[in-house]
Length: 200
Image 1: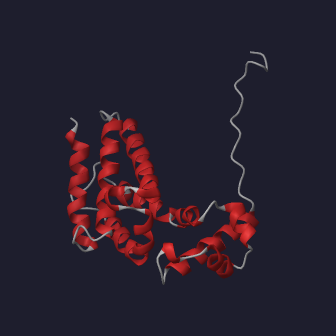
Image 2: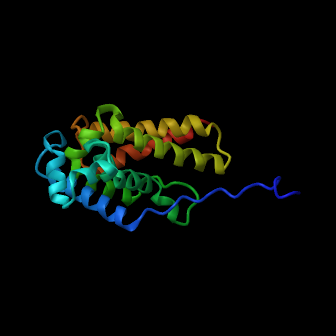
Image 3: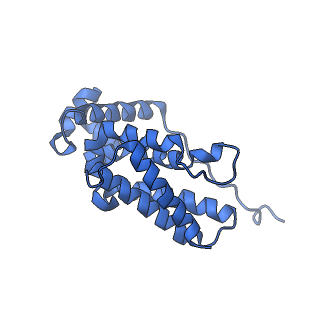
């Protein structure tokens, strides 16, 4: 095989510059601090950059607007949701438990602290930029796991699971589902298991 015919190694993503990472972290923290007292719609770029100790031009160098910054600041809730739903896989059993993993109720409890900000980005029914991101990442994880074990219709089941969890979480945060975090976890978990088992 000639050098021209050899497959080329895929270029690796360049690590973020430490200064950029620090600046973005300060902007995220500034936004979260501002949103602790008022909704995102009442927060200004000026207030965020003042809290972060950076210039306005620096803000727009990294983010298009406050919604983009807010979505970045809330990215951890997406990762936490995915991890909570799959926490049982760290145990010895190859099958999901009948009872929800403790991490699910812990995750739901943790969302209440930033519920006003999450409600801005995660609309009833699961829409909004945070809902889109959560649905996309949950679907990808569920699809990959079903495909890895040869379970049927991974695309269909993954979409159903992601849509159900995202929609229920959104409606709960908006007060449409009266339940404390533990009760919601107890009722939501069997629904998700049923979706996985619905396709024989």
